[in-house]
Every structure is written in C-alpha cells, then in structure tokens.
Length: 261
Image 1 (cartoon, helix red, strand yellow):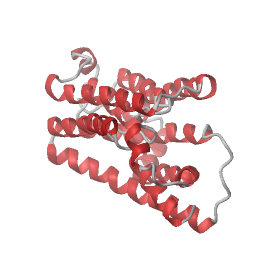
Image 2 (cartoon, one colour; image 1 turned 180 degrees about the horizontal axis):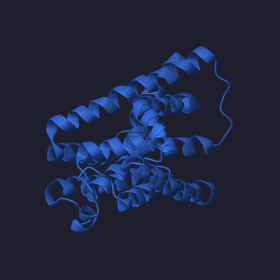
Image 3 (cartoon, helix red, strand yellow; image 1 turned 90 degrees about the vertical axis):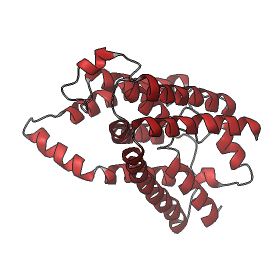
Image 4 (cartoon, helix red, strand yellow; image 1 turned 180 degrees about the vertical axis):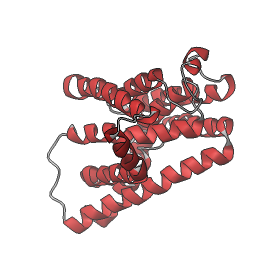
C-alpha cells in the first residue's frame, strides 16, 4: 500500500460513481486483478468523489438554501427531497437488512440490461409513455414520478455490483427527460447515496498515512470533477440519441469484455 494504490483507488472511485459500470463487476475486478491494496483507500477516495459532487453543485446548494428560507421551492428541490427520501428508504433496507450483493459477472450483466434500455430510449423515446411527460410543467422539470422512480432506482444501487449512474440516468430517460438534464439530476442526487454507502462501508479501515490518504482523496476529487463536466459537455455536443447510445453502450461493452477476459 502506498501512493500507487492510492492513485488506483482515486481513479477507480473517481470514475465509477458517474459511469454505467460497477466497481465490483467482472470487468473492474479482472482489470485490477494484478494490483493489491487499493481497496483500503475506498473511504478517502469515495469521500473525494462525494466532495466533487458537492463542489460541482455549490451554487445550486447556496441558491436552494436561500430559496428555502423564503419558501420558494422549485422543481429541483422537490425532486431532491423526494428522490433522497426513497433512496434512503430502499437503500437502508438493502444495506442494513438484506446486505444483498451480486457476483461480478451477474453485476455486469444486470448493468448491461439497464444500458440496453438506455440505448432503447434513444430510438423509442420515454418508456413511461406520455403520462409522465404530461405531468411536467416544463419539459426539463422533473415530475414527482421522476423523483420517486429515480429515488427507488438509486436505492437499489445498494445491491453491491449495481451501477448507480446506469439505474438513475436510465430511470430519468425512461420518464422523458433529456439526456443532459438526466445527467444533472443523477449527479445532484448522488451525494445522498454516496453518504449512505460510506456509512455502511463496513470493516475496519486501515490506518493510512495522511499524505497517502489525501492522494487518494485528491485524485478521486479531480477525476470526478473532470468527468462530470466532460459528460455534460459531451451530452450537449452529441445530442440525446448519440449520447444515450454511447452511455448505455458502455455498460453493454463492459459486460462483453468482462466475460471475455
């Protein structure tokens, strides 16, 4: 364990919270099979990814807090409240009660199925039909159904091996939101799940030298921040259909490669 393991941990948990892949899937475990010790840096690295999400939305957090004081609650705040509530309800049961986990191969397979549904949305539109679309005051506004469904989907990411980004982005696209908006909301709701995962991390974390632990934290922070901004820019440049194919296709490709290797 040292700076090399800290760097690997920072990259791993700087990427997987935002991409439709699992950090415990067959692909990731096969890719990292030659490295040891990086798992001991989960907490500082994951904290780095969490801080990156909070930093990314620092202006929205400040503005939302100000509006709450004046009881001017907008669609994003209602979405965050209800999605967080259902994430905690479902996630707590799965973490504290069932402690469910999937095998690496099964995890990548389930994520690939979700990825295929994301790709399907690129051609057939919202899988929820027009009902949820009509509930929106504005096409970019998340509805109550969006909040509940995506919150439950994020809660199910507590099953070890399932990809939180695949589940949340997929559920939001199925509800009729545009790709960039779905990404923004998926990023926005991530801190609640990430905090829950840290609380139930389990085990006794190793005693790490502060400079080495900070290296994992900083690496995950920088990688997460760059990736979130990059995904949003890519979604805007490629458009809904091509980005959905790329995002969902990543999960399918990871599953195929994981089986091969």
